[in-house]
Length: 98
Length: 211
Image 1 (cartoon, rainbow over the protein chains, first blue to last red):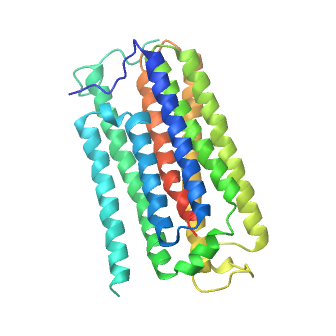
Image 2: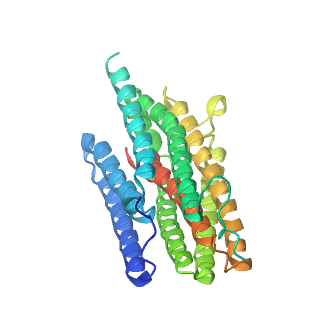
């Protein structure tokens, strides 16, 4: 089983990686905010949630170190995310088909 | 003090025990995400039913508070990730500083949230039957703000729990800098804090941006 421990011999590289991730997250938040004020109409909702999904992915993969985590841990979180997506699809489908 | 150096319970060694702890935390985080997803599904459902009213209602939330809180949580997530890295490098002093900084940011998040609640309350923007906001009286408006209070209130409770965990951990790091269990303690606390951040990443556009 792969260990999710980062390379302790290279904390400088790991710190830079974390800092770059934070910068990317702040940039994406800025883009989200800017797009909300542009007035994209029907595209505003899918775009806002797409950017949120990218940000969530970055937090999960880099900050939570899921990219180097164990298969069991990835599976537990992936299963929860899959159930959430299924729930959202079911809710929207139910309302649209009424 | 090296409390985690010896194997305990059904585990062959400390590594196996830590793997089990990580897995348990991920299962717990998955169940927490599903809890928020239930409320979020309600939000999505009613947003589809009342798109115009929900879009107008979003405009009455304090966008600067929501946006500032987003920056605060993202930065605090970075700090706990960095603190965890320092703990893995056996640098408990810096790990404690990182956690303490994240704790302060979490407190600032709560202060801003309280400011927004107070402002809403004074304007009559209250949950359920208490809703008395004259500027937005269409069907669906009360629903939006009830969901707003439920989602942000539950999230704020998780912030409080995270702050308690971070405070206990910071004190432990200061008092027992050589405890072999520090890295895994930091890792589990950091994972919880990142989950709180993950939830807010979706609440921010839903409650403050999408009009």
